[in-house]
Length: 377
Image 1: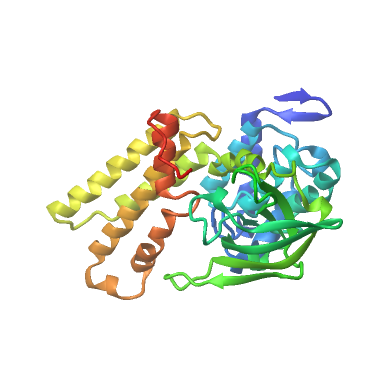
Image 2: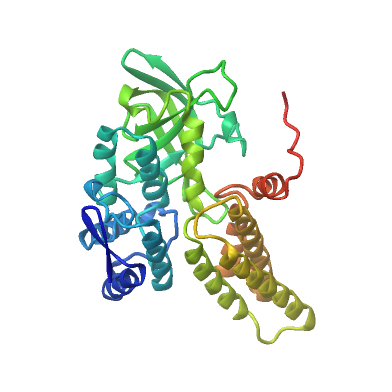
């Protein structure tokens, strides 16, 4: 059955699900490993090739407008696509920054010219995006950023430093927050820009993690000139642009449930010849994980502040799982291996995608209605 929408035939959700499953069965071998929302720099070529396969077969930008290279379907169809990709173990798109944050902000706030210039090549796999939001001096207080953009004739000159930028060294474009009014209250004096990463004065430097990998970069911006049309959305209104699209970062709840189910299955595989204390630790983790599954199933499909409950819970579950795995490995955990690498990577989960401290603030203030954390004047 198909539902007719203006200008496009829209298959019902279950018809589309069958179509997606059939496509993935025939093409999953062409995909890179399922790296999740963040494309590792070393998998750029494989990720780009996979995005081009998706575009060729009509699975790029499923709920994006047809005239911009998308499929023109609904968010419900997109949620199904994310779920089936999770089941197939393949990335649903090249990366979250480009296909969720950048495209989402362009659709909400971009001019027709900006949308036509940047969205079709993004969906077609011709450009890779990175995010230039966080700063070393701002911590979790994103509004405390100090990177500045100063008017210069027909454009802007940007100076500052960004950090934790995933794959910026292999990206063509970036979304950038910079302060454009230093005298305004900190949330009110920020603007949102699109930046060409090949611009003179833009220098990404890899950040080596304690796992030995370098998934993230710090980016130095020194007198980097942006054209006037790099501004996306209202001048000094970049905070609202950023917040409106960051709520989309949590993604499909159905895909999250599938990923959690796999994690619990892997966790259950740790069982075997365990003593009583080890069994109790493992049982407690599995019980917590099952509870998070039920919480996820009760939540609506769209992103909301309730997503913080799952983000915090699953992050802490992963940390405790990594600790248990190392403890069960015994002396082998002193050597290089999967358990050791997992433990070294686990603390990063408490920072990535919103720190655990920030999630607790959101839960307390917005969900439980507790008094807001005191803030300096």
